[in-house]
Length: 248
Length: 262
Image (cartoon, rainbow over all chains, first blue to last red; front, side, top):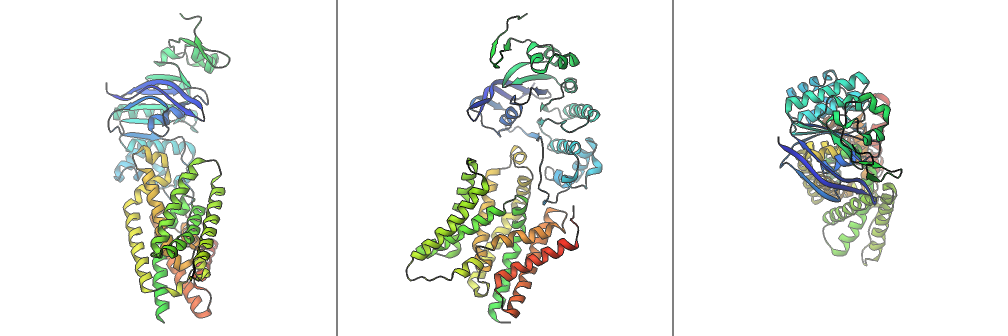
């Protein structure tokens, strides 16, 4: 296994508050790592830190030398005064028109090639952004809520697509997701984040974790019930981390 | 046609040609007010040029670059809204320029010429500056076109993909400063932004790729120069404002006639 990214005890401070606190994680080649956590848990901040877009206040982040990254941002706002079609937008990532069409077909939006980027729907845009990330033939694919604005059938399809891309390119994948039950099937490692890493592990081991259940509620956990993890702490009412009282 | 008209036409066409593609970036990146602030600071450049007795074009470009750098740093602080900050700097630099000029003895400048341009006073030396600047800016734009476009579409995506976004932003500032310096004579401090954004905004209506929009903006700008100078020649209207009025007339016509191209 080739290690692509390794974060050791990294923290990111925003306005005096730790948005990400003492997080360690690693992403290997061919591995899908999913970040889950409630709103404001610091998921996007952590991803931005790994991408080099947010400054790390402490800890150590090591990346494989000359790591090529394909990034799919949460949204894309292009000013309507900029006339740019989907295929042109993709062509900025690759000079080969054949590649552009292939990538669009792979994510099943080939029919949108001539449309202006500003005129396609949110779900279509997610696919186009995914196509663009693939075009760069990345070693690491980073996806910030890839299924945002995609309907439920589309979501399942999108996650299996991501898995398929991983198999094809043998790249590492780091993604943020809210769709717990959908994402479980297509992920190798789940990291449950709430400023710090609450729990992490294989999907089967995380969902039964009390820390996870506390964050997402028991019903959410019951729906999935494929993820249990070794939890070693609880949250007080103030969110402080305390040692677990009923540790197995 | 008298010599001064030929020089005016050549100078105007050169500035319009290069304002087209650069103006597109102003429109795409929503930098109209930013460009305005830089243009206002050109008056400080004139004061500096008179004080130190150096070439006006160089003095203006230098001051513009410094103001641009200051703006980039100040805008990152995020304590004041960017339009407030730009408003403060635009008018402060304009006023500082005017006050400093008034202190210089033995110099009586024609303020109107600096504020609204003095197209009919273009000399062959001015033409050399204009075309030199236009060639430099045009070459850099052509070389960096893809990167600048990518940065305009999504700055962070561009950064993750390995583009030197901070450096590109600086280059864009440098290009603005050069164009403002050479365009001063043509349309003056107050109307430079108009030459950048009006043809670009008009071109949006009839273009469906970024490159076509840049080309159309140049052509529309050049057409406005021709139209404005003709108006000025026959009816004795001020040249710079006549060019801007022509550009505006084209804008109105195209917006009335054509639906927006996607």
